[in-house]
Length: 358
Image (tube, rainbow, N blue to C red):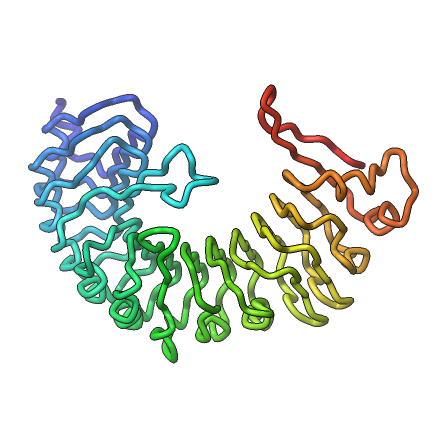
């Protein structure tokens, strides 16, 4: 390796089909940024610890199964990205796997990003509270019995902007009520994967929250939106298998900044009500795999700013009601203000097929 490479600050190998990196890389003592994302690297050299100026390590979607123990010596490390998505991301609860990380990673108190770390029988949830400088945390395989401990740790992260928590399995309940009354005050993005007995009370106090995804929550509350509708800065809301009731109502004057709403896999949902004055900023509405929803959302005619309506794997009873190219029925008139309406259906022969309905 040419001696000049020793002074590199950035090494970006994303997508390069390499299976290993030369040991000489660890002699790049000035290296700040090492990106191996989407490579086929299976192992990192034990001498990784020599990169004492490394600030960012990205090994997402590689073939790695573990990180070398020496990583805990990288005192200047700020950002560590280590998860691997599976091919069944859209449908499988176990949509990603984590790379084994030494437990002492929680001693790197300068870390600002840690995505994703897998809890090991409660060890991580107790020690991750040491990382008080974190801006982004993703933690998976969380057990119900460790919920209070995790909340205690998260409560120490006053700078946290993004939080992802994934239960150990689809049937496991995320116990997050103990985060009240002091959730991270600056939190902007929140992703919860796993069953919830109810929407956590503290969620409604997140005044800076812009993105919220509740996935596999399977809520049975009569009105799960009541805890969310007052969030003043929410712009994106995804509810994926999040509600087992029959009706969702978006009340007048609520969700004032919401621009994208994604409702997916609500097996019992058969009615959506949008009251006049609700969702004034909405631009995109996606209804996906809600098999009992056979009528348009009531009040959709009031949502004048809606730019795109996407109906994916929805009942034909719904989509056939407004073939705008041909029909002039009541349902057609309700959606004439929407510039783009699409139907997306899965077929064995062609996969996903998209059809414009207007």
